[in-house]
Length: 430
Image 1 (cartoon, rainbow, N blue to C red):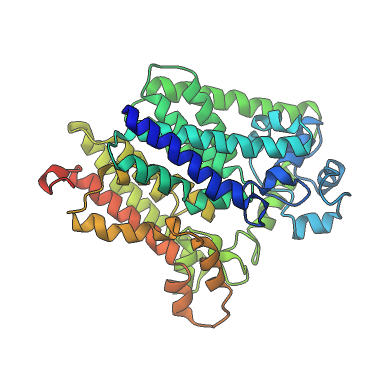
Image 2 (cartoon, rainbow, N blue to C red):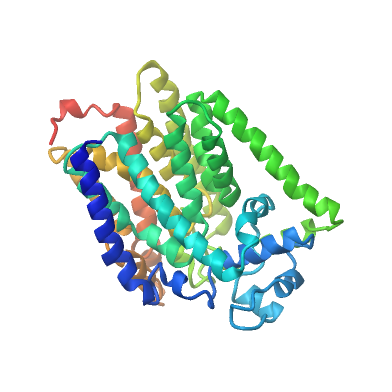
């Protein structure tokens, strides 16, 4: 990166952080409100409580453990088990591996652990943006566009406002990609293990890319570290003679029950916060089983096309940022993902900014597909549309899940660019 590019990066980063993040920090939707108050609910709280239970050798998926290790800073007193399950979403059905990774947070008091996660997210966001900018090779005015748009990316705000660990998982995955291009080290595998532990559907997506790209050393070390961390997590329960599998299955079934917060059917009033294809297909088919099968089929089809292009690219170079970015977008379609998981799209968006051509009509049209992730207040507006109770099947299928459709079309656009081999020279540079 040039010196002028570095200056633009630092200047814009400081300005947008101040105007876009620090000023609304006291507002109810401000991401940094977590720094000023840890007395309310957040997505990180269940993980914190469950990790403490795991450390103490008790069942992290039982309601009794949630009450026993409830931090007094939140609402002053522990709540009833019924409230924890029905309103607070506790306990969460995350794989037991995640608790071994979150130990550094769980040893801290809740107020400090909560603020530490917020600050770590912001610090890694800065490092991630700079890493991706260098990785993409963007030049000139594209630095300004990238910094401004990346800091305005709505899924990042959504994840930080709720203090969800998905943001940290994505940042670790991005940094692992950036470090993979340097000399072999243990940093990239460790970051990838953290990403897999926090959000398996995010971390494994990047791991698949590394497998197909032939990063044998990185993949081998990652799998070894994953194995060690999993064994440690399981042995902690074994040494404490804790039977946890039954409560884990019960917690998983509860979260994906009809009307649960992860359900894509109308019984869940917050279903339009989901971005996977099941939401759209259920509105079209009216059948949950058909929606699941259809989403997996379409996701598998797109993955097959991506895999074919990856194999074909071994005979001709293909930009890695586009390849892994395309896989990241496809990964959001067939599996359970909420809006903040779309932070993954920063990866293909970085490629998009670096290679955008004003003379390419497809590039200009595809800019509209980024709108649900870039336009300020896009998520609140989308959720407001979802509260409309008009029994119109077509509204549920096409208007309210507009983000899902944009994500599908965006995946197709990225696949097309991967197919054409990014021959922008034939179209003329901007």
